Length: 316
Image (cartoon, rainbow, N blue to C red; front, side, top):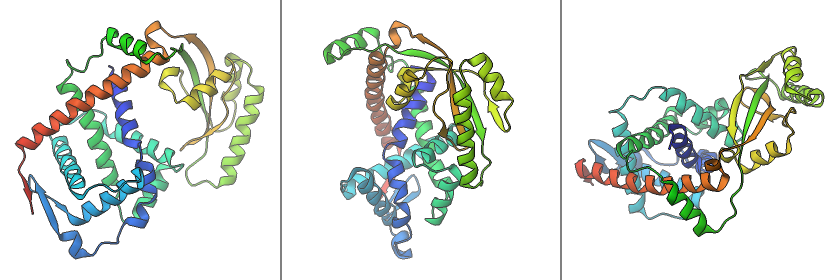
């Protein structure tokens, strides 16, 4: 499985439930007394875990899962997290800062906020943005470290995919490779909503006039504060069902509906569409990722157990 696929899986896992939890973080932060915050319940390789850490994680879990976890389970989760962050200090991975910033921006987008708005929300809650980014960094790095350590074992055979597909008895679906040209109507940070609305109307006007990529791209380049980006190829199996449906309904040579982004209003020119190879169908891609996720989880737990055996963990 490719490195981008691993990062996509880890990013998806990271965002699951986290956006909901962060939205309620303001109501949870700052309620503990200083004495409670200083009450150490465990020490992991010299680093403390406090009663306040457990309380906060418990509340976040309640919000994201609607269940109340056992206190001991929360403590063990925090111990594992400390071990992962400590492991992170041993590795330096190229491009990690960009990976973290992209994951942070995606998380903000899921919450219908800009990265700046999310940063401000965290600050109002008394939480440093670096705290969240450290968690993101640890999760991404952990995924890559586990993959590198168990690379030979994290291989999904075609026969296993076909067997699983037959077992599930689900009808496989053809996937398509789309050639897209992102077109961005720039909205500077801090601009009023009226400007964003005006730019959305400009995007709709271009959409109405856009009938083929050659002339349409040339027209887009003449517009004020509009960036026409380099072509990108996306497989429909990698897209969310909602986005896949949008592209399926957009004719080649036309523009997708305008979507707000952190940088402004963006549309996509559909400049090419072709059927993907036989091993890239929606069913096979889904099963491949499910099998990989299952194997990854197995080896991740194995690695954590190994780190625990090597660690100095003291309970208070």
